[in-house]
Image (cartoon, rainbow, N blue to C red):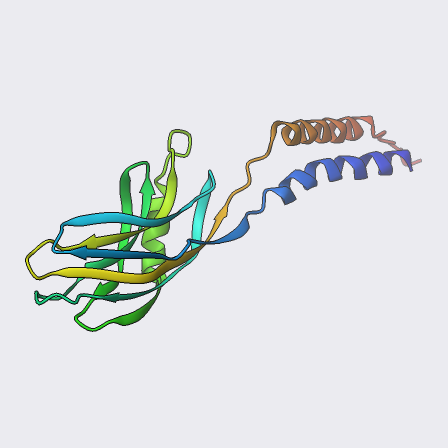
Length: 197
């Protein structure tokens, strides 16, 4: 009975940290922002969501904004809003989410499977031991040609992300004790050899 209790304790000490290592999904939303630019080349960050160290998957990325270009110039989706994965000051991934037209329109964006795969590939390339200020950001990308404008209202976005849990030193110690006790239990087992008469 004593050996059974010791084995159960050892198993609990080994299994508990493994169960803790499961990644938990976090959903975060950026505060809605407004933007106005008249014939100016600009790329302003409208909002950002900091990603936890070790984030290894983004399962959902959505945004909504009302955008328009009330100028007399041309129109293109590039004169609009973008979502970007940013490490420090470098954008390592981005996607246009709302292009301005001459009439105001509210545009909802949901990243598709290919966009999420591309985003997660960029996320996997981050060296978290040296990276700082890793975030998803929304940027207004305004064209500066004469007659071009970019206006947006209530631009916001949400991201669902997960970070692999990194066991703390106390967890590693508990695992080491568990394995040690398990080894001691295995060594103490007595083997009874019976010979046939």
